[in-house]
Length: 145
Image 1 (cartoon, one colour):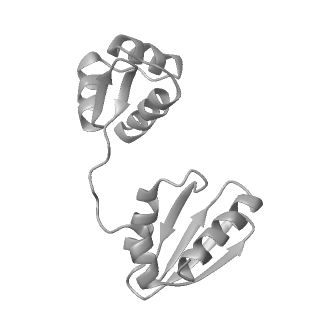
Image 2 (cartoon, rainbow, N blue to C red):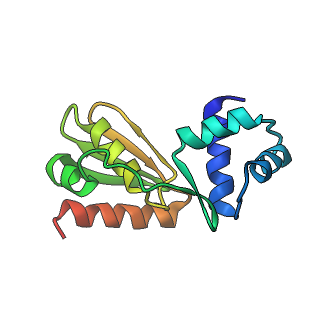
């Protein structure tokens, strides 16, 4: 079990239920088969930028991470294709990675993940109808609307 996996599970837990103490968090992790000490949880909470609120642990608002996806897509996105639940974005050479990162930062719930090459991005959606909806959304961006 890696740090990244553990931290991903922490995010999944706090997004799904109200967890107000590190003890509760440790117990919830234990319930999914992950043992973590208090020191480890404190470090993870800091690394993940979690804050304790009256409603339990919450993620802090993300810091500005770079240009918005709509701006990059308008400049570098050349085509949007689809194969069932996979949406393929063609970009100008050398720009797929930055466009993919910007799309990931948008946090679209219908996008499971992205993989970027030099001028191609593979956008993975859960199913065909969702892939079609994402393709339409991206084509609207491409057309400037």
